[in-house]
Length: 241
Image (cartoon, rainbow, N blue to C red; front, side):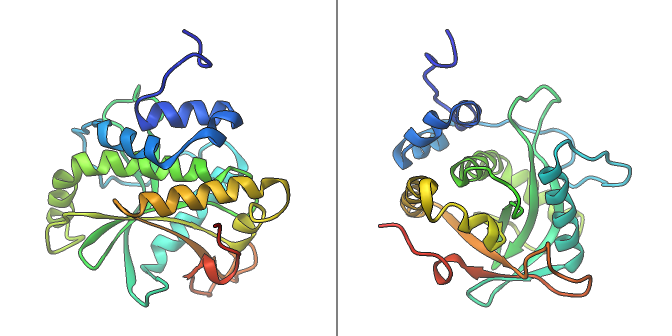
């Protein structure tokens, strides 16, 4: 069976096929992704989740390297203010999820943190990235499903290593990018993808917390001492629907 004939069932299936085909990405609906989120299980990692970052090699691709740099800088900042005034306490970056090296399609979460007792997952995008935001949403949703199945273990390890003082029972999920990334999807020939993304995010948010936010200031223009915070995208771009 070819990829074109394959019927996806898990989020990882959808993510792999959407990366290969813009038509597949354009056809996705919130109902499909919610069903895939519900059926996905694992992987179940036996190694520690909170690992040393010393000596880690860089990933390939300019935008991926920029995202790693940005994740490191935000982690060193310690906290990030959200639009509701709450602070996301950043406790790690490049957070591993694979159980074995061969776990296809499983990447690392750019940033993780704690906000109001929730475990925060942050998918970062940089301004130069041309990735469809629906793909970013798929990535975040796939990682959230893995974390859901392992949250008890992650929570216990976070407490044992002094990163939190209480059990983590739910996740709060964020896609964070500078305005340059979001703006390129709001107008012109890509606007239909923006409408699709907003519709999917709005529907999925009935079941789990997903926010898409503007990182300010733009990392490409920020100096070494500026602190980053998040703003609501609706204040800067027209909403779909």
